[in-house]
Every structure is written in C-alpha cells, then in structure tokens.
Length: 556
Image 1: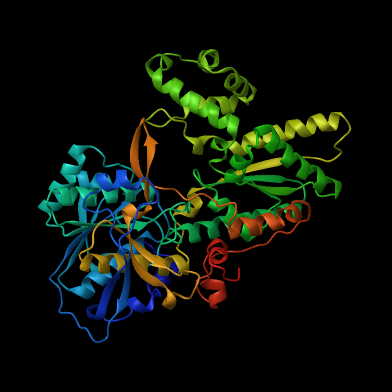
Image 2: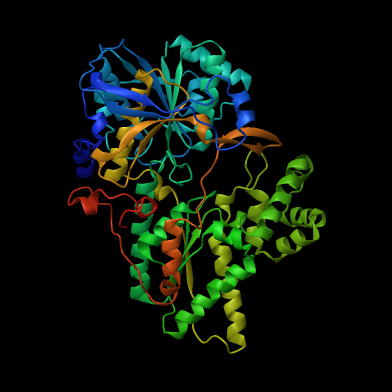
C-alpha cells in the first residue's frame, strides 16, 4: 500500500508521556486511595457489583528504591468498540510497548470488528512490525470496530469461553460510555464466575460526553474538533469573501453539545446553538428560529447578508415539543410495528400517525416540512427509535428561517437577502490523523492500561489527568468503572450505565462563549484555526482543546 509522506513521517513520532510512565517499568508502583462510591444509586449498584463496587482510585508513581522482579508473560486482548475516534491505534501501540517492556514474551491480540469479534472468536496477534504500520495514524482499521452489545447471559458466557480458550489474562475495551459500562459488567461477571481475567476500559468518543473529575476528556475529541474547526474556518473565510451565503453546519454530538461549543470557541461563528441551553430555557422550535431570524436581520442591516450557524446533531431531541413528539412516535411505532409496516405510502403512514398522536404532537408533526416528517417515520433503529443523526435539522432550520424572512419581506420589514447552504460534518473528523495531543494522550492511556493490568486491577478505566499541563506533568492512573455509574431506564427497565456528561451552562467554556456570542452575532469576528499542525512550536502543535484549558483554568 502506497503511503503518503505525512503517514511515513508520523510513524517516527515518539509520543510524549507522563513522567511516571517514563521510568523503568520495574520501578513503577500503583498508589490506591480510599474506597469510592458511585455517582448515584449507591445501594442498588453495590448489590449489582458485589465484587467490584467501591474500589479505590489508582495513581501511578515511581519508586526508585523498590525494583520489582520481572513478571510472568501476559496474554492480553484489545477490542475497539463503537464509532471511530482519532488515536485508537496509539492506545494499542502504548499497550503493546508496555506489555513488551514488562516481559518480552508477553502477547497482545486484537479481536476483529469490535465485541462481535469476541463472540465469533476472530482475532489477530499484534506483532512489532504490524503495530509499527499504525503508530500515530487515524482510524480503527488495524483491527476494525463494531457496535455489538454484549448483554445476554449467553453472550457473557461466550466471552468467558473464548477468553479461557485463548488463555487471555486481561481484556482491554476501548470505547465510550456504553462500551465501558459493558466492561464493568464483564469484570463483575468474571469475578462472579471465579475467574481471574481482568477487564480494563479506555475512554473513547469524539462527542466529549464521557468525562468527569477523573476523566478530563475522552480521546478523539481534540482531533475531531480541530478538524471540524478547520473546515468551519474555511467556510467562514469563503462566506466573508463571497458575502452572499448563510452556511448552516450540523456537527456530531447527539447527547451533548461539546463539539459544537468547542468549535464555536475556536471559530467564533455568528450563531451556535447549544442543545442543553435550549432544554434549560424550554425554547420552542419557533423561538429558536426567531432568534436566528433576528441575527440575520441585524447583520443584513449592516450590509452583511452572510453568516455561519453551528447546529449540534442532537438538537431536535432537546426542543421540548419535538422531544415529546419523538417520544410519542417511538412508542406508537414500536407498539404497532407490524401494522405500520403494511402501510406502503408515506401519505398512508402520515395519516395513520396523525390520527393517533396527541393533539399537540399532531399539530407539531403536521407543521413540519414533508421531508422531515418522512425522516421521523422512516429512519429508525432496530429498537424502533428515531435515528436523530439522519434528521436534517440544519435543513429544517433553513426552511423555517427562509419562510419567516419571506413573511417579513412581504410586510416590508426585511429588505435584505437570505441564501443558505447546509453541511454536515461527521465522518470527516472521526478518523483524522490524531493531533499531537491525542497521539500523546492515547499512547499514555494504552501504556497506563498495561500498568493497571500488571497491578492486578480489574473493573477500572485507564485515566490520565492534568491534561492542560505539558505531558510530563500528566498524572496516570485508573478510575473504578462503578464510580462513574448510576441507574437509568433503558427499554423499560433500570440499567447500570455510565452517566453522560452534558455541557454545563455554569461551566467556564459555556460562560466564555456566552460572554462573546452577542458580539459575534452582529460583528464578523471569524477566526481561522487552519489545519492541524504536527511540527513546530508547542503553542501551535501541542496545546489541548479550549474546552479543556478553560475547565482547568489555563489561559485559553
């Protein structure tokens, strides 16, 4: 396979790691804190996780006076779970290098195509020459990923069977909140069965919603937001040059608006909608459109009939009347799936649905553009729920804004022009070459996972903290997975899950955005981050996201 010059050069990059991971592995030690509690539902979770609940936080340090003998060779398996995120290959590289550093005879396997590869017993051994082909590169193509969820008793038993057959000492699950919830359940299951197989999780998701006091950011967020911000900056410059288009840009982030907020901080668009604020204000769709219309009118009065609007992917579920409508549709279509599938035309489906929705939801549904109605009815997941990412929310906002402005023009209250283009930035950021920050962070996470395994820990998430500081000041360790959990209703029953982190409206990143957005709305204040830089001064190449720096009180 032909390699680009950058790909070849990135193979040679040596990730920066915390000081504690730079010592000889036989001098590394693990310090443990007091027992911990879950974020909520403590008594219930203590019963569910009888063997793993309450474990202490682990911090990795070095002891120059205590040289440990080399441990026995370990057999470890890694699995990539869920959507791709830049840096996954470096997690595996860090894990591989640490394993070989502990004992040259240790072996690392990668289960292919995600958790489904465990159930199918499909794996590949990761060798020195193989891992070298993927260092510091994007994507998950080294072993691929998948979204199979391990949840039935038969599946848990099958995972144990496969791990025992392959004589695996530890399983490293690289994934988001759902995948790491699975990791917690597997760790508990293995102990319940009297098995010593360890399970360690690694925090992955570009959405940025897997974080807390111990997990400052999930890997991939930095690279993805930089990639999107480059594209947004390019569009902003084009908008300021052509001066005739409004660009509505939808960005990934179904459950939280961290990506949209970070991109707004980096590029200073005219409008950025934050879903959590819409929900907090109980802002209706009409009110949201009115707010965009006002910005368009103000800019037009200044002779600027152009602009940029950022829209989070999951916005539609945060708008009160749309959330109610989607909930009713999910229930209605799941309950009547067999009959609904016999309705062959959209007209028949729409009529049938409208007769069965509540009065308010029926009105909302009827008022939506026909294409959005189609998406609400047709694009559904295996559980019968709306696939929000496929709803063209940005096009809905454009249509409604255009209609409202046309009404105002007919009344003589708007003399400008409004011509809009729409974009959706999603896959463009998931497999980009990782930034130096993500390359360093991911390598450190993988290395840390190995140290936790060597310390005989299980049911932990690999953690690297103090990330707004230079890499040598980062703090490596592990967080008990149960510490991040609560109970939530899933498919009609209460399930243990890792709580998603939403944008905090009282947090420093949102406050910085809120303090400037009125100015950005009227005055063209675009900033142009440009492409991710890998070589050059640290302030250009190595700084973390603005979100992370603001959260930790660093100068952003």
